[in-house]
Image (cartoon, rainbow, N blue to C red; front, top):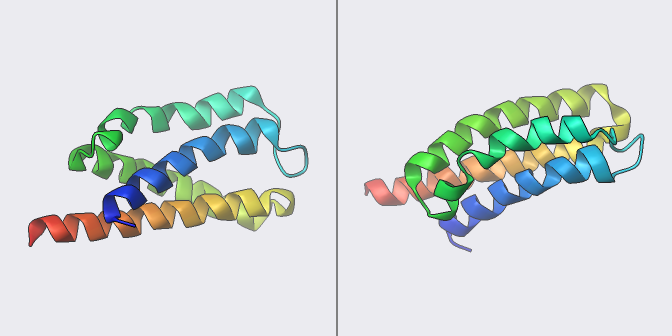
Length: 110
């Protein structure tokens, strides 16, 4: 798997996790709140086109956004035992995005 595919895949997975977690999963595993899913999904849509077009600047902005999602995932995993698995999935996907982004940008600067 190349770094570009890892960046695109992990970002898209975080994007798809939001409605799955906040709408589809039954309680106590999810909140079943459509408004929360919309609020959680909308910011991730902003740099999506640039990420799919493999623009490093958009990927960097996506990384900034995913830091926020990483913090939310850690907070939910710590405080909400029912939603721990979805929250940890968000944490792992956010870390994977950053890992692949670092690999991608290191290759380009050499």
